[in-house]
Length: 450
Ligand code: SUG
Image (cartoon, rainbow, N blue to C red; front, top):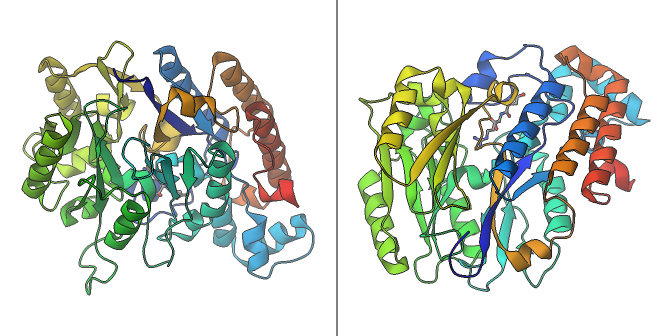
């Protein structure tokens, strides 16, 4: 909460979907590639995510949730020419190409850091909270998220006097992966901030030039910053991810950097032009009354490989009601001695981060999704929270109800071949209907609107 007029950072975590599986679909994502073909446990994944949400709630934070999406995504298969009953569509797609069915069955919408880029009302030209749903055009299994994401955001942030939910960035070549490549620094959540957009490369670059392709385009960053009306007063900075980071498996910048308030915690090799970024942050901070707190892990202290393996920087830094900050990290950091040593050094340094909390998110982590991937940050004033169009802000009873839905409807083992089971589609729809009822969401999924 900031001093001037209560504002809250609300984390909207994505609920893991009933079809969570390991199909190895994501390029440049080392965990997803390494775990391809492993049986998944969607029930455990969803319960791990809900335990994280409950922990946040119990710290006195405002915690939200976004629903899973309809998977398998029948409308995508129909657009490809599959026809007949929904069951027939799934069966014929499975016979034609099981990998295609895996793509339209991915539960990847759970990583809501890729749902949208969000600019709080204090930062924007028209004083509304702006959202641009990510187009996710780098991967087919993720590009099919954008339409439903937009619908869900419009249902929740429905009041157009307070919220602007834009169209996703147009033109597939301008890849936009949302808040995973966006940091915001400010003195407090409710104070005007500087928004840092981190791109992999320009869509017009002649040469991709590396092991993995960059997912976030420079042009998409420009478009989002422009439609969010951030440029006035230097409210946005664009900076490039280093090629070394992308090639080490940092497919999103949130694998190597995380911010909160005036703090930026990052790996020394995360950015292509670190000094220029620091200079820009310093100037922006001077104009906004804060000095950036830069917490850097040097390459000597921790290699990029260790950073990617442990997911140290895919942690959340949250400000408790007391004003102290807590690092929320995956267990894998505790199990990586040099990553843990960095955390201990940060805690001992007497800076703003006072505590570390380690969580078990292994189901999501095996697909390259740590604590930070699972949440979309939305800074909201009390009045903005009061105006939300659905019951997506959690309390203990809602978490209990969501856990019950998961226990009732989610499988505890899922392999690729199970996706062809027509019962899977029906179970998934029942779960989504029940989740929608708990959250008062209305008909946001295609199957509910038919
Ligand atoms: O896009 N994994 C996701 C992980 C996204 C993590 N998000 C952030 N870093 N914010 C991705 O790479 C794997 C799904 C599969 O392979 O089945 C996947 O899509």
